[in-house]
Amino acid sequence: MSVDLEKILRPVETPLPVFPPKYMTLANGQEMVVRQAERDEIPDILPFVEPLMHVERDFYHIVASRVYAELLAYYTYRVQDEYVLIAQVEGEIAAIVNGRIVNPETGMSYHTLALRRGLRVGAHAFATKMEYHMDILNQKEVLIVAESPIGFRRWMIEYNLEKRFSVPHELGGCPSWSLTKELFEKARNTLVVGRRPVPGPLLNKAKAAILPPSDPPKAPEDLLAATRSMLDSTATSLIEMRKRLGGI
Ligand SMILES: CC(C)(COP(=O)(O)OP(=O)(O)OC[C@H]1O[C@@H](n2cnc3c(N)ncnc32)[C@H](O)[C@@H]1OP(=O)(O)O)[C@@H](O)C(=O)NCCC(=O)NCCS
Picture: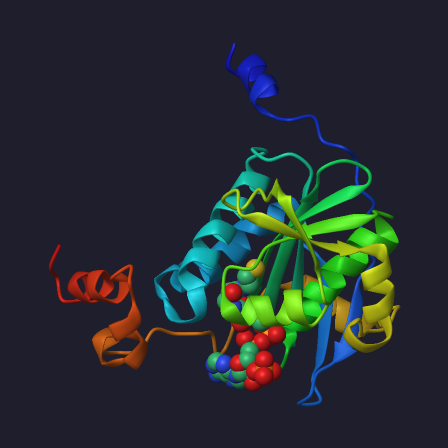
């Protein structure tokens, strides 16, 4: 009985081509591998996302909360046609990107989460996800939204995305922006970097274990001391600080 119900709850997945892993050299000289995360690797990734739910800086809290739910949905077969790519440096997780296909022509970009700052790992991971939609899945457009000013700068401005405001995005029904094939081609030579095949030892290191990020974004010790807490209209800093101090 329960087995039959599970069959109904699980969407029938469209078989998607596997993303061929690639690697790129970061500004600090380290090599970063981007590869597809297998479904059974999701439980290894979740513990690195969870702490970011409490970092309000740069909207990590909302993005991490949604990414956590999306990864869980993927793991438990509660989302249709999702994929997850991860970026790793020396095995350490550096970025997570995910999305899904809406239909053969249209992709839905979910999130980009950088677990290491200042090296454009998020920008590279996002470009790689667009490459997956355009070159591997052969789609015509990808629908995108940003939840943070940095995200807006990275996607809407750097790629000069087109407005598709009549189409509600799956992330909260916000107005969508679109990366078309034409825009992707314009960005290909500047924003899309990396090489294939990934040298064996580099890929093996990445696949051997997903190591914790050594310098992930962290909330400040005193959340209310941060200047931006004064501008925090959602009072997240106050709520988190109260929680930390043992209040409600
Ligand atoms: C948006 C995001 C993926 C971009 O990642 P990224 O390309 O690796 O860029 P970073 O976040 O490291 O850097 C952003 C800017 O802050 C600067 N910066 C450098 N070190 C930083 C640090 N320790 N903390 C904050 N900012 C830093 C960078 O120099 C960069 O400036 P630039 O835009 O002029 O180049 C990442 O900021 C992130 O995960 N943000 C939270 C979640 C989010 O908003 N995701 C996108 C929503 S869809």
